[in-house]
Image (tube, rainbow, N blue to C red; front, side, top):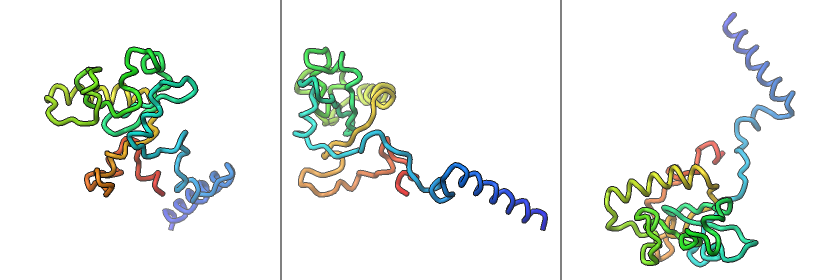
Length: 167
């Protein structure tokens, strides 16, 4: 009986704490954290609009199909900057190969070496995910070329996704 009373007391205290802060227990448990900006899907032509050519536009770059807002690094990605060639597109292959060659500025990773794939993953994790906000995904990551859903796309594997955001 004493254990049940203690449990009831803990439950009451936590409920009172929630009400004191102006929130119900249900709101505390199920309200997702607010995002700074909605995550969206980008086609190739939509992403190209954010290539750093206009000063008043954000600058986006996609790596592994994840679109990052790199505007805070405009000294690297804006018009005339050293890595502007990477902006406004999915430059996964170029990043893996550390190449600005136009033929490498694509999402295609076929034929990359293990070393290049490892370099890609390290740069993805330690530069892009660590420094820049995710603003969306490229359409080819989620959709097949014919517009049908990509069965290999799993929301739970995405960098921004946590199960509690869905409730």
